[in-house]
Image (cartoon, rainbow, N blue to C red; front, side, top):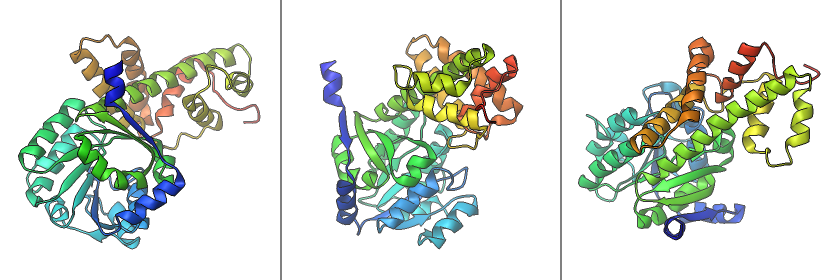
Length: 328
């Protein structure tokens, strides 16, 4: 336990500290790059916060929509990954999964082909820890240091600049890049070497997935017994069962609003990475396996682009009970 505590540095930022950090790095060019999906639900507001802080952003995406919106906000559009890297001191990637990160950074016409002295990479994607280590090693061999910084906090956190970041990499690189990370976050945790950040993110995603399913199962039982979900919620939210998952995901179900803050299909990807990591380490993952089946069922039934709270509808479907508010 003592070793673990020494490895983890937790930084909580006040609004004043965030404002000071913005001023200190205005001259640094930053690229914010996201691929596969456009600069979308998470990437677009994160990039806008960097623009608001005074950074020069060079952006590229295979889908024009996100690029066009950022150009209108002051970013500079580029024609490819290599071109973006050539004009940036710090390249930030925010991609769906391990293969996309490998392609964008290591592939033909990728970020490393545009490398130059002093360039650094921050990968904010949520991917498999082993993939992070593989990409980081290739970057190091090419003379480009890389920091991982997966995020938690959803669309609202991205918009408000209040994301929680879980960072892995060289401590001195983390210290150097922290002022940039502060602009997009309210909490930054240094977790250790490369791979530690995404391992921490997998723990986070595992807990959210299983807890969301547990909330659904328990509340459907309560509703089937004749007790209004909102009554149960108000009774228990202040006790040990209270949590952000309970607050956020149950509200979505009761309001029948499953607009994605974090898409179900992306949570399936994260949970799959958690399962693969756990199995590789010999850790039994029965709860994650069960919830994965439920998530995949809902995705196959058209909910893949809904919020991950859509897994709650699995329990509604098999019981015929909807977790609605009394006035709905």
